[in-house]
Length: 213
Image (cartoon, rainbow, N blue to C red; front, side, top):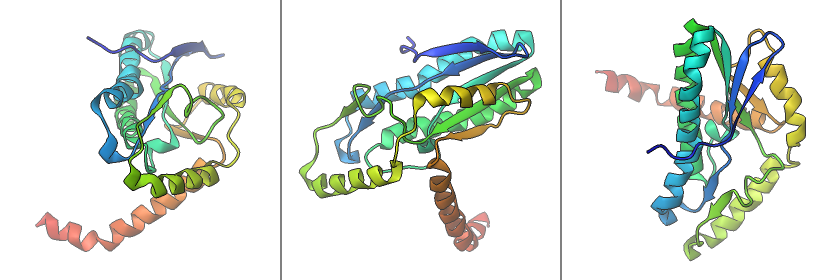
């Protein structure tokens, strides 16, 4: 039995290209040792499998018409990761991988795929759509530190209403991107993260070559 799918919408651009847009608005926060199965499975069902079922439902129509554009709502948390939201990150990283592969699979049918990767926005992400486990005393100080870091990282939240124009820019583009950040903060986060990754990979390349045999 398939889990309930998250909301989706359809849009027809000026060129007549049908666009499917799936949203994935659920998160659960806790330190890793406190993770319990039910809310974690629910989060993966919504954020990952919900988007998958919607995409599967749309693909026959898009293939038949020989065009289309699938927008997947990922997150800066789909290419980076922060403490206390590990399962959320797992769902978004998986969506990123599936969508990047999908983009290559459907390109011959004239179908395009874009991953929208928002930073912090004034939405209900941390409100009623989220769940929080009972804190572990051992993580109390760390939890406070993480919350303060998040406040500094997010800064002024983005305005969801302003995102509509950005979405239409992507939809109406002749060559839309595979990935597009929403908000001013994600680019800096991504650059710092990937610079560090590249530096570590290069440093340990001799070990990688040793493993080659």
